[in-house]
Image (cartoon, rainbow, N blue to C red):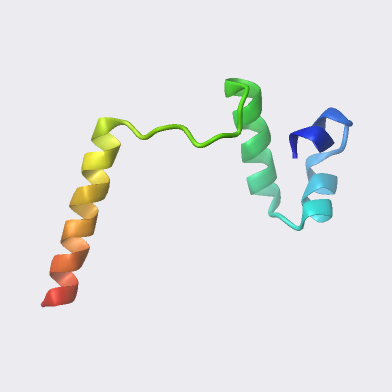
Length: 64
């Protein structure tokens, strides 16, 4: 996606070319501009705790 962007393709053109939603294309290009990478960043410790808590709640609801 970033290669297409560097070749002056619009978000709409990239979206149609790669068959991805425009919001996804826009998000990835924005992330690349801000961070210089499109790799997934590590989650914060707080984020990991929230994920674990959500999983536990879901498991409790399913077991009832």
